[in-house]
Length: 97
Image (cartoon, rainbow, N blue to C red; front, top):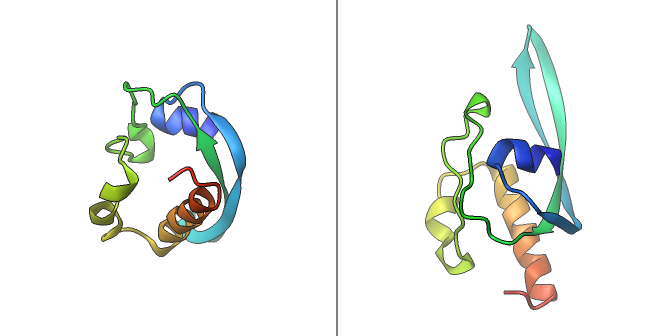
């Protein structure tokens, strides 16, 4: 919840259920780091004044309807595709889409 608030400015979000865990690597101070990220399906009031965290190189935050996701997914990391696909699967299972 803290990460979501810091990176997007989103308030009043609630975790509904875990989605998946992804891994990625990066270099820091000459070391190779493996980072584990835990992802969750969340619910929110669709706050309109989102604020991207520029310190994390986040340029833009916006709400996108499920039927308009395709252009956003064309140039994204495989691990993010995995998260979105897990979220879509869960939403379809609970018939929220």
